Image 1 (cartoon, rainbow, N blue to C red):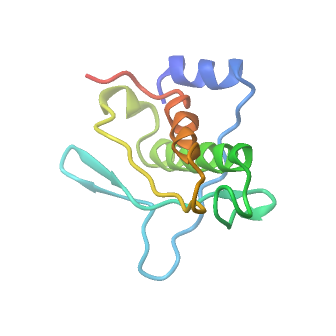
Image 2 (image 1 turned 90 degrees about the horizontal axis):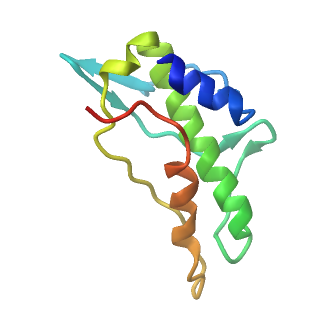
Image 3 (image 1 turned 120 degrees about the horizontal axis):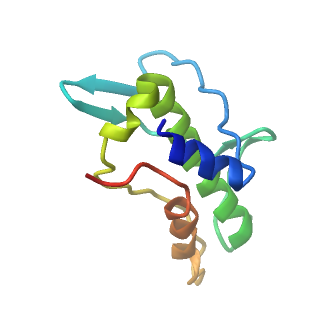
Length: 123
């Protein structure tokens, strides 16, 4: 990863998690030419998989932490695949899903946790 991203992560006290080994037919990412496709990642933390619905069994803060854990897991996968070359890889887009209980109107705020994770600048 570019030094700027590594430095920013260090400044924030963030350590990237270990990359999970592929299971069955799943790959964390796949290169195709000069593109890197990152597969689905879930909210896995040291304490286990985060499960539940925002506003019912998961608080908004827990959902934000789960979104951040997912983004960091994806970033770790990218770093493991292309290392310092991430300076050449623009971030095209990011999207995600979450389960929310009826009436959980602030669940969209979990996306801000993903957006706050440092990445390489777009080209």
